[in-house]
Every structure is written in C-alpha cells, then in structure tokens.
Image 1 (cartoon, rainbow, N blue to C red):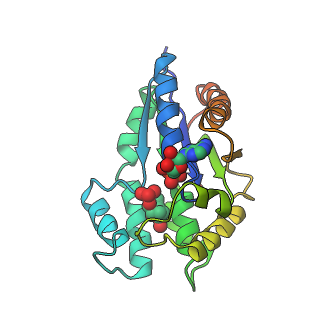
Image 2: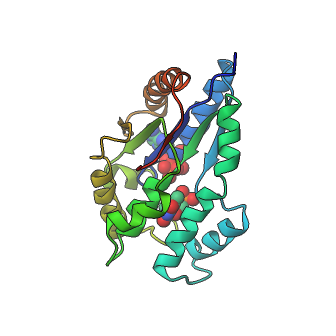
Length: 212
Ligand code: ADP
Ligand code: 2DT
C-alpha cells in the first residue's frame, strides 16, 4: 500500500502570539510520538528570493509594494516541489506563516484589495489546518517590544489583524482560532489536539489547492 501522506499545518497570528514557539513544540511532540514532521517558515530567508525579502524587511532595501508581494508569493512557489515531495513521503509540515500572512500584510497597505492580494497564491498546496493564534495587542505588548523590522508598529499590526479576520470568514479554509493568551503548555495542548485530528483526516484525502 502507498504510504499515507503527511498533513500541511499552518500557524498564523499576530506578532508575538507564539507562532515560532508553538511550531517548534508541535514538531518535537509529533516526532516524539513517532510521526514524521518538519518545520518550515515563510518567508524562507535562505533562498535567493528570500534574501531579497529579508533585506526589504530589515529596511536595508526598498521594493515597490506589488513587487515585494509577488516576491513573497514566489518564495512559497519555489518551495512547492519540496513541500509536495515531503508530504507524499508521509512527513507532516508545520509551517510558520503562509499565504494568509501574504494577503493580510499587503492588503493592510493603502490601495490593495484582499482579492488582488490572494491571486498569486491561488493553487498553492492547501493547508489541511490553519490555526490562528489570537492575542490582543495589550497582551502582545506584555511579551516585549516590537522589533525594528518593517511592519512592526501597533497601527500596521491592527490593520493586519482586521485583514486576518476577513480571511477567516472563508469557509473553504479549515481555520481554527486558538486562544494564544493561555500558558505555553496549554496552547500547545490545544494545538496538538487540532493537529492530530487534521493528520488523521489528511491520511485519507488528497492534498487540495488553495483558494481554487
Ligand atoms: P511569534 O513567532 O508569534 O512572533 P514567539 O513564539 O517568538 O511569537 O513568542 C514571542 C515571545 O512571547 C517570546 O518571548 C516567547 O517566549 C513568548 N511567548 C510565547 N508564547 C507564550 C505564552 N503562551 N505565554 C507567554 N509568553 C509566550
Ligand atoms: P517573521 O519572519 O518574523 O515571521 O516576519 N509577511 C510574511 C508578508 O508581508 N508577506 C508574506 O507573504 C509573509 C509570509 C509578516 C516576516 C514578516 O513578513 C510579513 C512579517
């Protein structure tokens, strides 16, 4: 019998919601329970395209807004063959940010519709589960200051949060809102329950295409 595919699991959420912490914990927990799993993050700053994006985020370069949006998308597309290979091999991928961040961040800029922003990512591998780590700006502030990268301001993050709320109305995506204000361990438990469920379901259904 062909091996069962892995699940594509995405964590999204506002700055300091705990995405990075929880991605690591989930991958470790899955591996320890004998389920092959690997972490990924977008942007992946290690590729040539990723380095252009990284310089932009670090404010070392300027890029026109449409251009950088398309680079973020290209950075996902360039990794699609590797992602599909892993999933087919039965590896569950736990991804820190995906096309939802792409659409939410660019559409928070003046003059960009959510509709236009989703277009370049139509047809990407569709996540089996997208968990949105929900945290109020006040609680995020208790976890430390904003960094110095582009987009790291209270006003912009509030605009991004509103765009995420619009994206979460889309019933074609399996969104789960996670209360990220709980302790690290409690959030991990919630995330693990949803993930195990998604992994079991994904084993028996083909990988979908996002927003198609
Ligand atoms: P993100 O990747 O979403 O920006 P991080 O995982 O980097 O968030 O976490 C941001 C900060 O908040 C880190 O200092 C981390 O240790 C802390 N943190 C993460 N999860 C929690 C939690 N549930 N409760 C309190 N602090 C947390
Ligand atoms: P981190 O590396 O700290 O997550 O910050 N972003 C991300 C976009 O504008 N478009 C995208 O497609 C993606 C994936 C979110 C990366 C920053 O880049 C933003 C914060």
